[in-house]
View 1 (cartoon, helix red, strand yellow):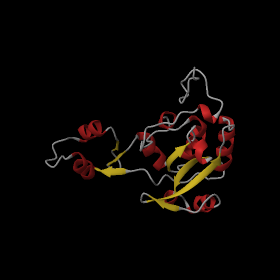
View 2: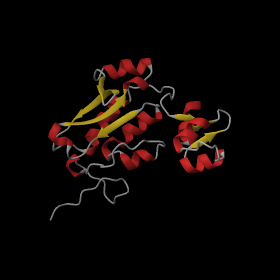
View 3: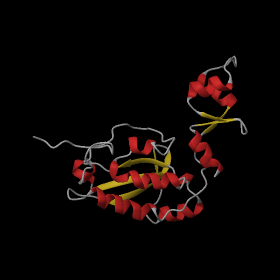
View 4: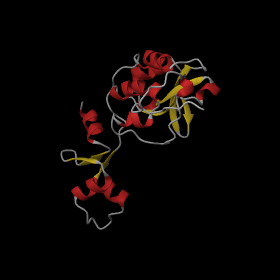
Length: 191
């Protein structure tokens, strides 16, 4: 009988080898809060992606699961154009930026094999991301009231700010009169 494959930290037992990590199949999920990372990032790279998020570095995609054994690499893709000048220098130590689907990205890679443990990946990823510096949050989306009305199709301006906030699920800041993907991201822009 095949051993159960775990992919989430809420599972009873943490997998030990990369061969035990199932891929997270949710694609193109935007992270609007730190807690989203545990839901959409595979266990081996969660702490590294949390560290990048805490440093206001925009990640685009990552992979550290049993499928990566074929290519021999786990990876985190970061959006090069969202980096501070200092972090661009650091990113270039690992790879030159490349255009992928209209995004200028840097691929941070970690060699893997059938014998690679989760701890091996976590340690290697931490060694890479710890070199980056905290930077200003510049990449979060924000929308004016008129932008939000256009997005939801409120041409007659019948919805109140509260209606727009409730309908979109976004956070509204009264002072700037802008909508943000989350209150957490708004606060990161002010730190």
